Image 1: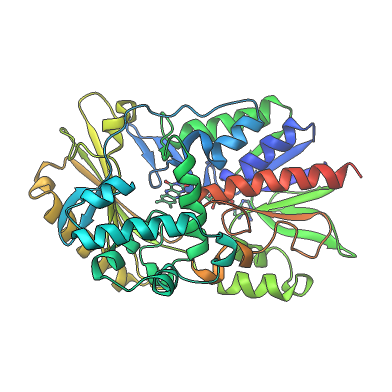
Image 2: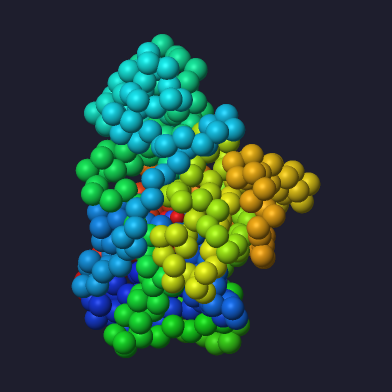
Length: 432
Ligand SMILES: Cc1cc2nc3c(=O)[nH]c(=O)nc-3n(C[C@H](O)[C@H](O)[C@H](O)COP(=O)(O)OP(=O)(O)OC[C@H]3O[C@@H](n4cnc5c(N)ncnc54)[C@H](O)[C@@H]3O)c2cc1C
């Protein structure tokens, strides 16, 4: 076998598909019985599309997920409906101020704050992200401007667009890079028709129709290494030899498969100290939509809400609607049951405040605890120059992909960008 890919999430499936397309023999091993990793989804018995958290692809046709599909000669079909995004601030819902004109007119910003907010946005877009990866958004702001409280609050909202709910620990370089790209992109976010199943299903099919294999329910137990060269993997079923192995899961889990003594200290330290985001999600089924809104993001509160079936009715049986509400848990407390309870309480309070009595219309509710939402919280020390590079394993033939490695974009985009890098690198290395 030429290449073994460990993991069937966005990163592993994209890497596998890209390598098959380049003519490599690929086997992808996924320990679960279902593909997709954190983007997995399924239809339940009643016909509801159930996703482990809702997924959209930042920057639509201009983003990294679409770039993978373009390289494969395919495309992602996005839903066309566009509902106005909201912003939840001090207990009230407002239109999201996501352009200079909207900043000037927004009721959440007094006139002077609106003017300064536009200047902050312009300053960010004109800045070089490379100079700001290791600083926070708040540091960026205070370096250039005299603080105005409403603008500082607004920076929390800007930071939350890259899933960091607070500006005082969000990497300024990551935000600057995202805003510069978002400004040029035609579509700010693309929601795949039929949910993440479309993306996962297409990647899977490209691998298998191209002669690759995807094996479900097979867990890799060890990556075999000899004389600093990868030899293959041992799974709970059998042994495989391979010229290259791609580890496509959060880098923390690599330490279970390779002895840390074989890996560079920088990688081991990063993996051991990796800080992920975690959240709690409530998914409601109702007969009427709870809101006619695009994504609502909290400003200063780690809350978001999304109403997938108003954009894509195919996600539920006729006459039924899904609403998704999320609360991002405090840093480092995601697995603490007390904190989970407190977070759920706060989440319910904010939903009630935003949509009074909506809970009375709920026909069914699903609660999902998400221990890892984004593999790497985009704080300065985990911004892309500080994350491990795809070949930074110190072992020839062993590569890293996924949303914890050094690749462009935010959230799932990192997984797609990393796949493009890994497929290129393997293609070069194996043809030498
Ligand atoms: C609630 C929620 C909402 C989100 N919303 C968005 C969004 O809107 N947009 C966005 O871009 N991102 C979003 N994300 C983030 C996105 O889901 C992740 O960044 C992305 O799915 C990560 O993909 P990955 O391939 O790097 O890792 P994963 O999805 O974690 O995949 C890793 C895979 O490897 C498998 N694996 C691990 N170890 C082994 C082993 N030893 N042997 C075999 N298999 C193994 C795992 O089972 C898993 O399937 C969201 C995440 C959540 C949880």
